[in-house]
Image 1 (cartoon, rainbow, N blue to C red):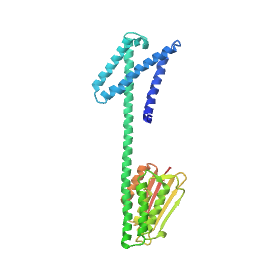
Image 2: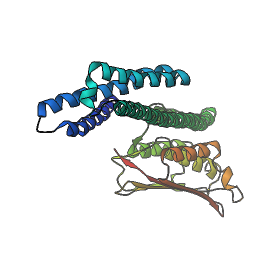
Image 3: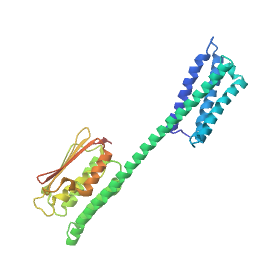
Image 4: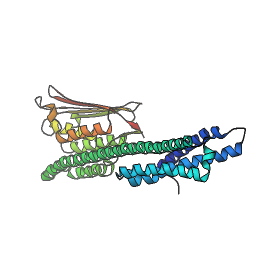
Length: 337
């Protein structure tokens, strides 16, 4: 079974450490060109240190330290040091690994054992901190995804509700455009259901949906001369978060009062340059006294939050009411497909 990337990285970390220790100790044993003896002695000494390290990492820390049995852990560490000294003395490895005799050797053995126990303990604490940071990152990412999905769930019904209201009005009037509006609504619903939940979609698809939405509104009371939608640049190949631009268009129709005011107008402009910078704006006439923070209601508030979550530090958004002309200007740095 193939190892995962995380396990491969962990294996390489351990392997690199022991290779370094091997050559570090090997230099001590290589005297008088006795290569075979140096290779064997180095392997034996590294193996004893590895046994100490993995005893601490795999047994003492999980069973005692992680379970807050601090006293037992300290006693086990002391017992490990004593056991190492006794094994070295009884097996004869003391004469192989150490040059001196008596208490000086015991001090060296205690020092070496303590050093590798400490190294393994510090390594464990480092890994625990790394794991905690990774878990925090995953939780933050999941939290953002939940919030984005929640915002989309609010935006989509809001968009559909307004459109159904339009169709309902035409149905009451038995208007000839009722059936075409239902057909166009079906296309838009397909976009909301199948594309609105994706992470990104093609900018061209979002723009095509804007055209469908505008046509849907104009079927109610055609005033195409009062709605100006023009695009610049090539949208192919660039991706955008779905259900962003359509909300600005929806708010322009909602507040321009195009249905009742013969002089109402809307201007929509989309421009994408060769570097993927999108400039999108809507303008419409509205009440001069309407506060900017009331323009758009929940739809605009949610899409503002959604943009902030999906494009942190890669966007600018301004909403302004100047003498009864509401202007929304959005700048986004898009990504290539």
